[in-house]
Length: 490
Ligand code: AMP
Ligand code: ZN
Image 1 (cartoon, helix red, strand yellow):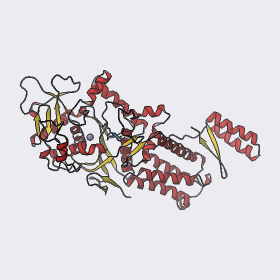
Image 2: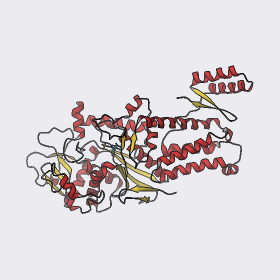
Image 3: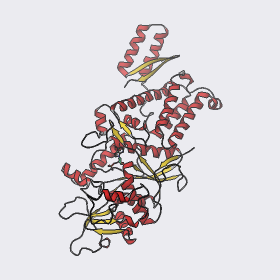
Image 4: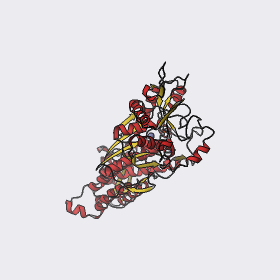
């Protein structure tokens, strides 16, 4: 089966080939844990979860690192301004360590609620300080760094392909940046890999700068400092996955600076390609507008739950869009996803209401309907393998489910149907099987009694039994050719 992805490095849709057979080394830029994640952030992590599931469905084992940025990401996204964690600490009257722990826990809880697979390694930047300092050391030894008042910088002019990845026009960038250009920097594109704690500033998170990394080691007190945001990702990725990754993922906002800088410092240090494939998700807007603090439109999972939407319904909403298209969040769109998931659950519940046919295996495999269910599983995996085309996968499932509602229950091949549901759960993570338990035996007895009442044309009793089912079990009945099926009402 084909497996291909849009690769930012080449600008084309490329067939996927891993360095080692059946193993993918994958790195995902994780969240900065200074606040709750909003719907846009979560959309990104849902897409990368689909990537892992797709690779697995295509028989790859995935060794994946996702980082937690708990230090060094400045409010400017560049080298100036406050550290987001230290800012969060002042806002909340806590230490930066406490803020990081609180929002890391919240992130883990959200991952669980959205049924995102745990990465092989979930790494905090603060736990990789020695590796980051070592990377600074290597870069310094190779002549890629220089020191100025506020830190140690990467010299982008020493890395001639710096502009290639994002097709940057460095001359224009320099002209545009003149106003806030730090005069000590040699080029506006140079970036801090290790920053010194400014004099007079109190930081919760800081480490001693090893003397050998300094141009003129301080003779009196030690120089405290902290890593640059870009350096973290390179250090964590390479120390756990090796010098060259198969796939690196992130948001499109990362292309011109964060990923460009990751590539420069990693490749400068190792002399090897940093990653074969780069996948980037487009951004989600809310009501057609960019998500921003001032508009207070960055809904969290808790906001959605308060308005009556479950995390898996949000997951379905995300899957309705392709990761490379700009998405638009509206409560109308989310409601549509909620209905779709509700309908899918009622289809999944049909498996409790069918019986496996008595045909032998040979007959089964040639049976037209079962073959089409097996083929649906394959088609879903194929659609995802085509650059994670989740909207196409959903359409394939909708069509198969719609066919199921048009045949007699006895004609549904139970085994093939359960297999399709398992494939959907494995690849899309919607928990169709876990969220659709069978109904209690007492409810089933009411359904049988109602059927008998109908057979004897005792309409009054039949209606009373239907009402009892709804009242006591929240189960509705829908009459279909040759009988009736039950479905959940919530
Ligand atoms: P941050 O915590 O700011 O580093 O962002 C976490 C992740 O969310 C990054 O991968 C961003 O690219 C991604 N992201 C931020 N805003 C959006 C958005 N509106 N839509 C989709 N992804 C986003
Ligand atoms: Zn990163």
